[in-house]
Length: 449
Image (cartoon, rainbow, N blue to C red):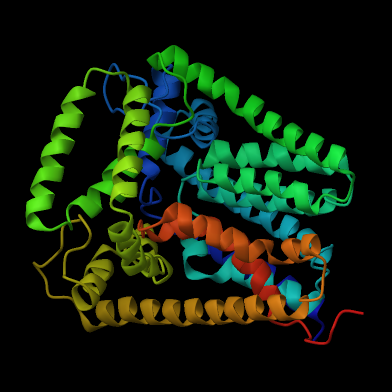
C-alpha cells in the first residue's frame, strides 16, 4: 500500500476517533476548561474578562483572551453553556484538521522534504500520541496554540530562503499562538532570533527581518498590554508567568528545603506577600516573578536537582484519567486511580459505596496499558528520528544544520521553560516537534546527494 494511502487512513482514523469521542462527551472541561468557560460567560454577561464566578467579577489577567473570546462568541450566539461546550469541541477538531494540513505541507517542503511514509509517521504521532487525543477535545486553548505553531513553522521554513511574505505570516501566526498560550513567547522569540543564522540573505536584511519579527510580536501583543494597563494600572501580558514561577517553581522547591532553612524561607515568603498585598494584580505578578527568580538563582544547585528529578514525569502521563472523565466514566477513573495510585481520584470524590467491578478495573487498566504502549512507540520513533536527523545531515553548513535540528532544539527550549511542572497537558505544545522528529525515523541513512 502506498504511503499516501496510509496517510489518508491515518488522517481519517485520527479525526474520526475525535468525532466519536466528542459525540459521547460528558465532562468536556478538562483541567482548566471551566476557568476559560467562566471568562467567556463573564465577557458576555458582565463585559469583563475575569476568572471570578460572581455577580460583579473583577478583571483578571491569568489567561490570554483569544480562546475565551472565541467561546464567548459561541455563547453569545447560542445563549447556552452546553451548546458552547459542544461547539468549542468541534472548533478544536477543526483546528486539528488545520494542524494536519499545515503539518503535511511543512514536512513535504524544505528543509525536511519528507516522503509519504515519513509524513505518515509524523502525522500519526501528531494525531495518536495519547495526550494529543484528549487535549484536542477539551474546551481549552491547547489545540489552538498547537495548530498556530504548526502553521507558523510551515510559513517560517518557507520564508527562510527569502520569502518575506511567508516570514511575516509566520510572525503573525506566532502572535496567534501566544494569544492562545503564553508559553509560545520564548518559542516565537527563539525562531525570530535564529533568522540571524538561517535567513538566506545579507546581514542587513537578516537584521531587518529580526527587527520586523520582534516588532510584529510586540505590536500584536500591545492591545492586550494596554488593556491590562487600563484594568490594573500596570502593563503586562499575563499574570500567570510570575505567579506560577513563585507558587510552583520556587514554592514547591521551598517545601523541600532542609527544615531550618525551610522555616526561614517560608517566613520570608510570608513577609514578602504581605508587602505586596496592596499592589495591583499585574505589579504583584511581576514582583512575585522577580522574587522567585532571585530565590531560584540563590538555590540554583537545589533547583537543578529538583528539576532533574521531577521533569521526567512530564513525559510519562497519557491523559487516560482525563479521557475516562471526559466520557463520564467516573467509577472507571476511580478504579484506575485505586489500582495504580493512592485511590484518591485527584480531587474528585472516590465512589467506595459499591465495590469496583472487574469490568471497571479491566477497562481502566486496559486503556491505561494501551496508552502507555502507544506512548512508548511514539517516543521510540521520536528518539530514532532525533538520532537519524543528527547523523544524516552532519556535513551541512551551520545554518542548514540548525534548521534540521530546530525540532530537537525547540523541545529542549520548551523543556527548560516547563521545568519541574509535570502536568501532562504542558507537554502538548511539544507535539509538533515530536511529529517532525518521528518523520526522520523512516529516513534512509544514505548521505544527501
